Length: 482
Image 1 (cartoon, helix red, strand yellow):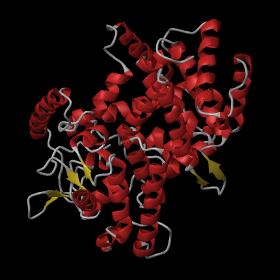
Image 2 (tube, helix red, strand yellow; image 1 turned 45 degrees about the vertical axis):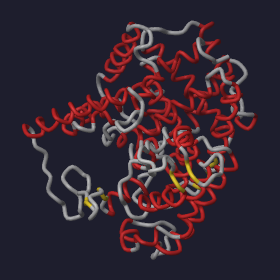
Image 3 (cartoon, rainbow, N blue to C red; image 1 turned 180 degrees about the horizontal axis):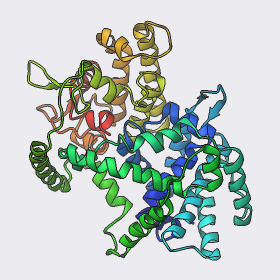
């Protein structure tokens, strides 16, 4: 129903889908249960490019022709969502496995697709809309019986959709974060890291424009209830944005595809992909151009008293052996505070476990062992670092007891990761195991002299990264890059 060649699958290669997905995400975040889960556990604020990469890869697996891979991905997503539950700021329970919430996620995707075609001058006729709706129904069915069901027919869908919009959606914290914070503070993608001035200027223009376009395309009934004001000219800007993006479909086939976007986001200069060399050359050129641009338009770079420079990044340090190290605050922000709320708590460590499990494609038993190891580490950290007993760890509490990070529980996390990678159980990671499991996650190139990576070396490197705050070509791409 939704394999390659179908209308559903072609959505992901449509340039307008990027704007439509932002709209769908806002409508998802406005649902109280989904918004609470996003606010508590999501990494989309601190690691938006990583989150986009993971989402695109998951959609690829879910809509491909490999049925075992599709079932495996559905099971992984169900395990992930089963761990997302709690209470929101109003003390209401939320659960990411709630069927009504899961149905709403797919409903927003379908309705945003229909809206996308309309705004871009390609409105779907009734037959095409019925076909697309059936494909979204099939997509939800693959997630299993616990995911609920969309209304039986398209005729029944619209009253359901209008009812949820008018009666259930709220102006949640997650919605406000997406509209008013995310795009204003979006970190540069890898290709533009050498041009901070240019990226900041472009973001200052594009961020508000994306917000205006998104708000203008939302259902009017929800805009009124949420107090989202539409500025004059917003409808014209929205129409123009969708038409401009839609015009890019006239480019030759294969120029703009979701797969190409995934590859671009995944490449790093130290990977063994041949295209990485070209990316590195472009990046070097951009950095040189950026240096010249900064000479012409220098940015202030004075400490503000908190250890941060004028660019917002803490100044780095160099160890005696010459290896770059992070300051305590930078390490806290880049690695520990995965959700971006300014504290270290269980959702941050769960996000690390989730990222490692997904990147290394762990089976359920290995994934459970990893989550259990992280849970034990959280209990150890909480008992040692949470001096005020508020159930979370602040930057100050962390900075005062940094050595306590490398306790027995963290060693156990490293050993679980090593065991997951050591497929043949010979207590070392050989080149084949490295290429099979570490390429996408760790980008490591330097193995031991005999061509293997021993358990002791792996545990030492992981502890140095997680506790010693030393930068690592192995772990930075996984946990500390946006």
